[in-house]
Image (cartoon, rainbow, N blue to C red; front, side, top):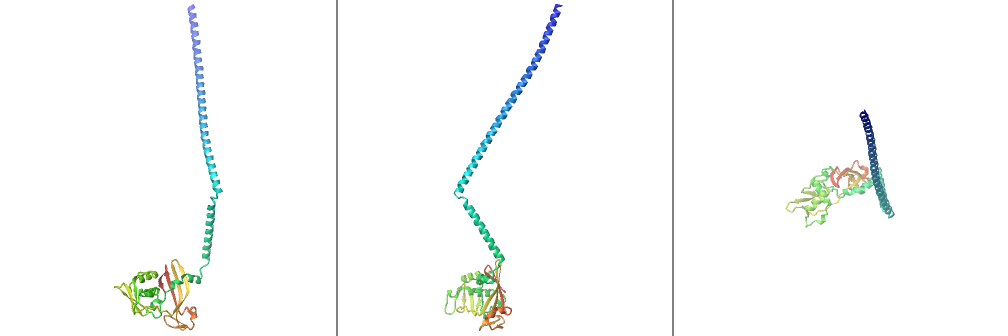
Amino acid sequence: MVKKKETEKVVKKSSKETINIESLKEELTEYIDKSIKKEFISELEKSYKRTIREKNKKIIIKNMFITGLLFIIVCLVFIMNKNNYFDKFFIEDNNTKQVKVTKTKEENTNTEEEPTLDELKEEYSYLLDNIYINENSSYLSDYYNGNLTSELKNYLTLNFLDIDSFPQEDNYQIIDKESFTNEYQKHFNDKYQNKTFNYNGNLIRYINKLDSYLSDDIINKNSTNIIREITDIKVSDDKVLITTTEALSYDNKLYNIITNEEISDDINDLLSYTDKLNTVTYTFEDNKLISIK
């Protein structure tokens, strides 16, 4: 009986101890979990604070660099302005604006006001220098009918040459081809041809063996009795059209060049009879004669 009681006591004691161990285990586990969690949170906070500090440090360094750079730029601008470095740009700009304004004014002026005939004469009348023909020339009809043959062009070329500069014999002259060709190409835009031609009754022959022109007689540039007056000038692109009224003048009288009809007994009436006299339009392109009509 005694043993049974003792056994029950031992069992009860063992059961209590088991309960205490389980409870202690739970408390210990809870404590460890709390400690670990607290430590983890603490480390996490430290890491976050460290990251923030490093980021702030970088931002501060960057801001300091930008501030320093701006300070240097401001100092440079101040020094350059003090030494009047920027003045030249403003002066150039003002000059440019002034030039643009001037050009605009000039363009407007040119657009609004067309040049007068007298102004055009002053600028372009030189083109007709030496473009003339003697009234006794065998090419007179070709000239006033606009038939610019090779022979007629050679005739006109001779008008431009200084005849006295070429060799003279007792009854003839020699004109070298090179001089003649160069002068021809200055005034006509077609290909030069070696053509014998007649210059107011003097036959100018091309001699192959001499490679030159040989005249039948001493060349005299006979003056012409044909007079002209410019009545209109038109300028378009590279072309200049000069219109003239022309007449044959004898003894202060005016005659139609082709018909020889007397038109007026006063030479000053040239522009009063443009409908009865000879109206001619000379067309030049790049300063070269391309047509007579």
